[in-house]
Image (cartoon, rainbow, N blue to C red; front, top):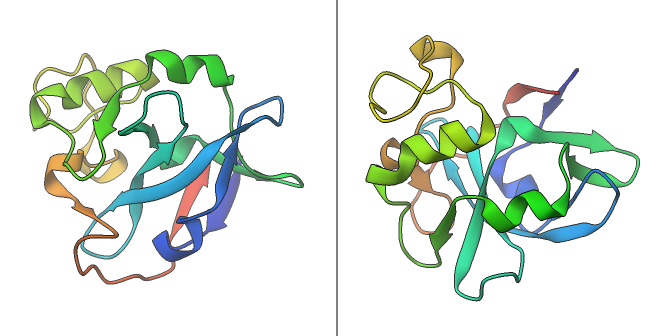
Length: 145
């Protein structure tokens, strides 16, 4: 496990690779908190035109090849997605946490597992889209496995 420090601005536009090095797609947008800390990536995989795959930023690792996620591209065919230009549906947030096996804050009642508020990714409904809202963009550190 390593700690990396990337801002939303540094992540946006970069390509994400799967665990075999295949190009998954471009990070087109992100959900960030008030401090500019990215929580979720919106990746244009090209699988479903008009939709982004929603990927937790904690699943991203930095390798010699670039930014990678620890699962195969095929996992994204069933991944939760968001329509371009629209926010992620709040009533589907539990599905995000369950799909990726993450603990959710208590506010996401339909998630299977809940964790301490300061140790979990916030749901998209309480975050802002980086490209459409003015959010402060500070470098942040997060643990990536």
